[in-house]
Structures are given as C-alpha cells and as structure tokens.
Image 1 (cartoon, rainbow, N blue to C red):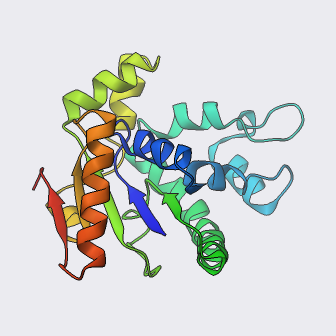
Image 2: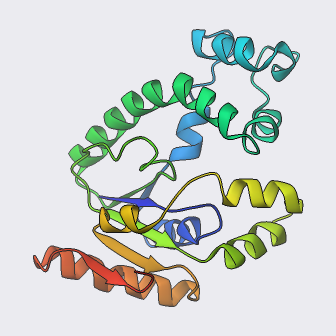
Length: 203
C-alpha cells in the first residue's frame, strides 16, 4: 500500500486511476472526507454554524460545492474548516489504512491533504506527484473550473521543498500518464530494494 499526495491538477488522480485499472484498490481521500458529512451529524451542524445555514441543502445534507466556493479562496476559512474536519478525517483514515493493510492486496490511498494533516505516521511510503502551477491551472481550467476557482484550488495546499524532502518518492506530474506510471513503478521498486528516498525530477 502506498500513499499518494500532491496539489490539485498535479496528476495524482490520473496515476491513481491507472493503478486502479491495473488491479489496485483505491482509497479516495476526497470521498472519505465527504463520507463524514452525514446529515444532522455533529460535524455537519458545526460546519453550518461556522459557515452559515445556507451551506445545507433542503434535506439537511451539506452542499459541498458551495462549501468549496466559500472556503478555497480564503486562508482564514480554510483554517476554520480544517479545525472541524481534520481530526475526524484522520481517525477514519487510520482505520481504513489498517483494514486495507490487513487485506494484503495492493492499495493506493490518494490523500491530497496528507502534509496539511501534519504528515501523520501511517506506515506507508509517501509518493508526491508535483507539477508547476501553470500546468496545474491549465488542467483545472480544462476540467471546467472558472479561472478564479482554479487558482484558488491550485494554491490551497503547499507542496514545496519541505514536503518533497519528507516524501519517499517524488514524481514529475508533467509527464504523460504512462510515463508517470513507469516512473512510479521504478521508484517503488527502488524503495522496495532498500535504496532509500527516490526522486524523479522536481527537486
């Protein structure tokens, strides 16, 4: 099992999808976070109290798209959401990782906020997929995001030298999907042979 992280538009989801099509099980961190938003739960009530009741739909479920529009452009609001969500998210993530490791099958956990969580010890090799801001913005725009939202998402998380230094493998997300997959396989093999941290560009 490996943990895959990186900023929006870097190519990590593309890599996770390629692995999934090749038989890997996939733990989607975004989907895991959304699973916490149970209508009427203490967490959802706390989010509504923090960001306003209009964040709730008619069925009392959380409007995650509206939440994103409110939170991504503001560092202060992102920090407020983190205080509410990160602790329960990490608890569920640890539980899912333990269950996945016990299954003894290849798993990839895609968790964009791994470093923002404080880089918790999960016993997994950490693979960071990185790409320049210009590349990531172009990808987010091609996915249909307006310019302001694309820039807000691309800039929401920090992945600099410190995060690269704390990763076991750093991949260049500018590459074509199959080339990225090849780098991942070679890097993982190097880690398995005890060669220590591996890097494929973007130091």
